[in-house]
Image (cartoon, rainbow, N blue to C red; front, side):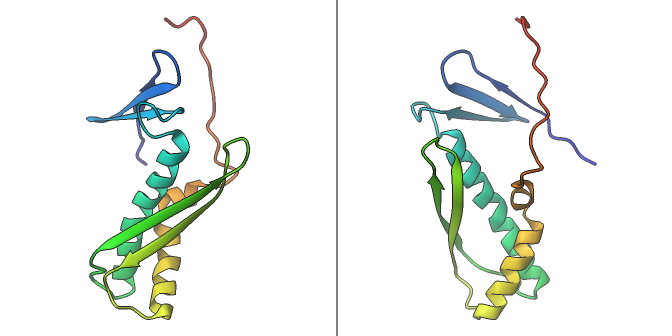
Length: 132
């Protein structure tokens, strides 16, 4: 089993900087210094789904999808909570509707973010006061 270790820091306001390995990502709830958390979530979902789609295609006997582009739309309610996410995926490969349905079904099983977006998966939260 692997683990993911990262650090997210907010010095003030609504901006946080997350460090994962050698990478840094700035996220801002107000969209001033970077994308907001919902935007990051839907883009992360698509970024996970694309390689899952490629693996699903390979498992279905299609070695190269060519270029893949995902247009994402997500709906928010009045509290800014995500209510839906939709992917409009364009691929270069010429495939039938049944081949595409098979590949998408495989990709849904492979994509870790797709699997994680369920009610049972909530963070365990432990808060340490007066830590600094």
